[in-house]
Amino acid sequence: MMRFEGVAGDFVLEDAFGKPEGAPVCVGMWEVRKSDEPVIFDYVHDCVLQYALEGSIEAEMNGKIYKIEAGDFLYIPQAPDTEVKWRATKENYRAIYVTYPHWR
Image (cartoon, rainbow, N blue to C red; front, side, top):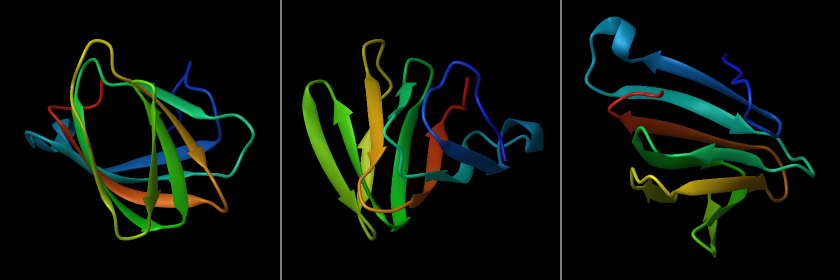
């Protein structure tokens, strides 16, 4: 599991495969743990497609709040001004992600 310096909140992230394996995308799983502090990511370097496996989460993006439940897909475009605040709402949230091209 990876932790990112400068990213707030309680979460873990693990790549299944990506750049080290020569893949053009990065695929993995992440978990956001229920916390008072949101997890904040910017999407300057990549876009992401996420599939929610369990739990629920709110994603605040460009002034809108999206509620994601297990079974939902979410696409976040790569953009210089796309910052997302993730907050697990009831319990821990777990999802599979695909980023393009790669995390940072």
